[in-house]
Image 1: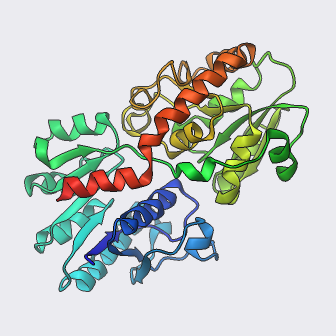
Image 2: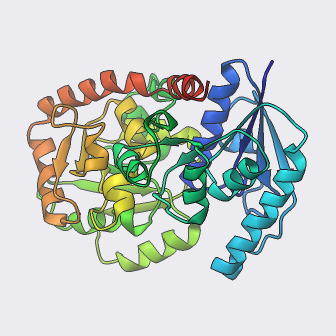
Length: 370
């Protein structure tokens, strides 16, 4: 069985979405027959759960934690010290080892490439720093999640055979639960007499939760409750404070991952309100919530952005003007006005998401690496 080293400079577990993506991809690679080891830094985390329990994932691979100077709280300088000390630990750990090496972190990719390891770098953020430019000169294979990122790195000199697009995905079976909407609401203690609009994920500005909160003021449909799940505790408190005067919001903070399909089943509309003000949102993101929403079979309202248009269209979702609370509110109202048509679009999204399973993604990446 061939060894596979997935190296990730993250807290483990972490409440951020990249933790889910990394754990799901490690599971997917391991189901393809690899002896996989996820290598992460031994950083402090407030989450005390076992990672496999926290992410609700079967233990099909091992997690190895390596030493680093955990100085991230010191800001940018502290982050780079942490990154470089972790990279040094990784180098010592894998230098004499053979197998497949894979990472989302360009300093790791740079150091391992410099010492003769064939490594694949997965890019999510549009980085263009010295590490990235050196990786391009070394002809490192790069996996990106959108055509926007493909165009960026092609313009920087990455050759066609060294670059592939692999959008994010979903554990589609996870969302196939035999629960009615009323049963889901009772489980979650959500009102039975409201129309529920759901947002799940980070409360980062570029992901647009503030636009949805403001849109709640303009929704004309009666008895609508806008529910938010996700976010770091400090972000949740700040978000509650900022929008405390909007009465039809329910801000619940981070919820266990196993509850996510139940929340989606409880909802009438699922929203992706990403901003157009930053390239990471407009061009580079491939939100996992998008694929989870599609797998849930509930009508979707999304910002009309190139990054999201790579997966969605008018046939599978309702699209609105980004950063425009009134446009978002009008689009949500439209869903309720023609809900039978909205359900047709939701079924089409469910059909289309089947090609975006994590296993399919892992297979495509392995074929590209090989």
